[in-house]
Amino acid sequence: MGNLDGRVALITGAGSGIGRGTAIRLARDGANVCVVDIDEDGAAETASSVREFGRDAVVVRANVASKPQVQDAAERCVAELGGLDIAVANAGIARGGSVLDLELKDWQDQVDINLTGVFLTVQAAAQRMVQQGRGGRRPGGRIICISSLAALMAGAGTWGYSATKAGVQIMVRGWAQELGPHGITVNAIGPGVIDTPLAHGLAGDTGGPIRQALEQRTPVGRAGRPSDIAGLIAFLSGPDAEFMTGSYVLIDGGLRDARGPISMDASDPLVRERIGHMQSAAERRARLQPLIDER
Ligand code: NAD
Image 1 (tube, rainbow, N blue to C red):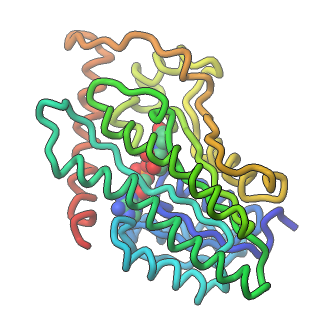
Image 2 (image 1 turned 45 degrees about the vertical axis):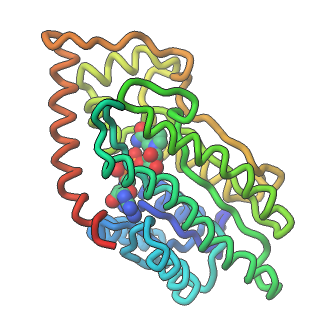
């Protein structure tokens, strides 16, 4: 018997990284999972892992920036898994650039996915949770939105990403006010650097010089893993978190207060590795961009 036996979770961006780790953890704790992503192959892989725990999984290809697609995902979750009790608004992208030349499209995509996408996901999920509550069939609901440590700080080139994540941090406080009377809690999580494809462009590979420098600076001595974040999401989804809503929970290994200067010297091996990672991040982005544009 798990904490989440019989519950149904909808997770966006569940085809990779934190979303995949969360799907696996919630399945381990007993939940059936609606795996939502623009990357159908990644989502299918996650769904297989969920089924290995004997849980049901439904894969929905949807862009969180599209209201009809998000509504369809929530509809299929209810129709095929029998309800919607937990929603994790996790899908996100990072588009850096200077204020002098950041492309409007990069700004817009980041806002559409990280901010509007979270709003559309929460709206679609909350509407169904309220309906379920009125029917007296299922009690309450749990909504968890993935913000970032970046919500608390801004740097050169990352201020746009930070703005979207700070937006998520404040939106959950309003939603907690509106949805509390329906028995629905809404919280935000602020991960630090977590070992996923999104972080590789910024924080290097495990064992590489950038990652080592970062780990030395982090009080717990390592970067985060998707399972670290998934554990917190499992707690917020479970019975012990009933009294918690409107909160922002930082989970960063202590990195917020431990940042050192970042070298910009091109002869520095750290900087060279960083440039290499930015290139591989650019290749991944080129693969995902056509999927983002299809809406
Ligand atoms: P990731 O790139 O590994 O996974 C993101 C997933 O979202 C991918 O499967 C991608 O296909 C999907 N996605 C992207 N745009 C989408 C869209 N429009 N619609 C549906 N799916 C979409 O990244 P991750 O690190 O697991 O990031 C998950 C969340 O955690 C993001 O919101 C990110 O901003 C946040 N976060 C990550 C870190 C980190 O260090 N990795 C730190 C703080 C916050």
